[in-house]
Length: 538
Image (tube, rainbow, N blue to C red; front, side):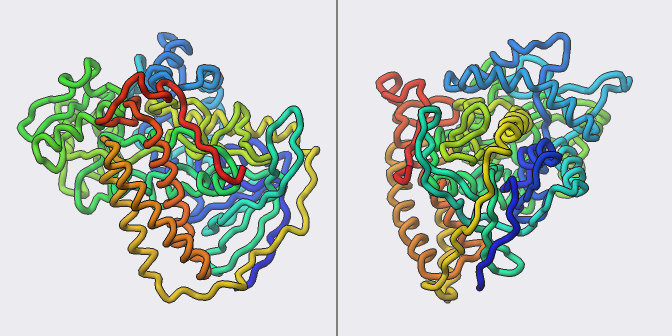
C-alpha cells in the first residue's frame, strides 16, 4: 500500500454535514477547498435530523426567551456570551438557507412559515421542512457544493490523524502547534495519502456510535474528537451524552428516530396500560428537556420490566399527522403500525454528544489553523444538556463565525510543503480481523450497560477497567497491522469512550445529562463547572 500526497488546498474540511458544507459555501469564492467524507456526501447525522432549527422568527417570541430557555436546559453550564452570540444569529442563518433553496413548511394559508415547539422551548420557534428538515438542508447544501468549481469532494475517505508541527507561543495565543493537513485513508483504493492544507476544519459530528443503541448513522464514531485529542487539543464535557427519549422500538427499525416535534404537536407518552406517566416526573410533562424525559422512560421500563413505552398522537387529526410527520407515518406503516390509529413503541437511544473539542468564539481550537464546528466541538452553547433543535443552529452559526475568521487570515498563512509521508514499513496485513469485530461489540455493549442514562461510581470504574484493556489491545493491533476503515473507526471509538468515562468519573454530582446514583451535590469540586480534560501531548 503506497503512500503519496494529494494536491495542496487552502482549506481541508473533514466532514460533510451542515457544518462542513455551509462553511465550504461561505469560503468557496475565496479559497480552494477539499471536503472529506468517509461515506457518500449526504450520509451523516444532519441528513437524519427530523425536528428542525430553532430561531426567533415569531413576533410573540424574543431573543431573551430563547437565551433563557437554552441556559435553563444547559443546567447552569452554558457559556452565556456564546449563547447570546449564537441565538442572535438565528434569523440570519434561516434566511441564508432559504436563499440557498431550502423549502421549509408553511402554514395552511401559505403566508407564514410553520413553527413547532419542542422540549425545553417556551415558544414555537422551530422552523422545519415537514419531519425531514435535516435531509432538506443537507440535500440543498450538497447540490450547491457539487456545483462550485473551487470545491473538490473526496467521498469514502477517512481521516486518520492530523499533521502538526511545533510553533513558538506568542503573547496573543497559547497555541504551541500548527496544523498542516491530515493523513487520509482512501477506502476504495485501500491506500493512505497526505492532504496538505493551510487551514483544517473538523466537522465530523458526534460519537454516539460508541453506544450499543443510537439514533445516529454508522459514521458517528467520534473521529474528529479523537484526532484532535491525539494531536493535543483539550476536550470538555464528554460526560454529557444526550439520549433521545423516543426512538422506534422494532427489531428491524435500526433505531429510527421519532422526532421531538411529535410531542410538541400533542403526542403523549403512555405505559402499556394506556396511562400517562410524564406528569409524575416534571410539570412540563412531555415537553420537559430530553434528559428528564429519557430518565423517566428508563425508570418506567426498569420498574415495570417492559421493553418499551409508547408515544401516542392518534388523538390528533389524520391531516395533522400526515402533513407534519409524513416520514414517520410512512416509516411506521412499513412496520405495520398506523400512527393515526395506534401508539408508537419507543425507547431511548444515544443521540447527541454535548461535549467535544474546545473552541473559542471563532471555532478555533488549541492548535493553530485547526477549527472545529458542530457536534465535534465544545463551544459552550449546550452546557450540560442541549436544547432541542439548537444543534443545526450551532452548525450554521459557527460555520459563519469560522469562515469570517479564516477569510481574515487566509493570505497570512503559507501553504505547507514536504510533509512526512505515511510510514507503514513496520506493519503487515492482518490475519486476525475478528479482533476488530469482537472489540467493537464489547466496547459498545459495556458503554451502554455502565456509562448510560443512569450511572454509578462502581459502573464507571468497571467501564474504565474494561476500556483500558481494550485500548491496549487496539493500540497494539494498530501498531502491527495495516490500517482498515473498521480499525480506524474502532481506534477512534475507544478513544472517545475513554474520554467519556474519564469525564464522568470526575463529576460526582448529577447535572443535566450526567445522572449518578452516588450524587455528592455541592461537595463535588466540579459543581457548576465544566469538565475539561488536558491531553498529555499538549
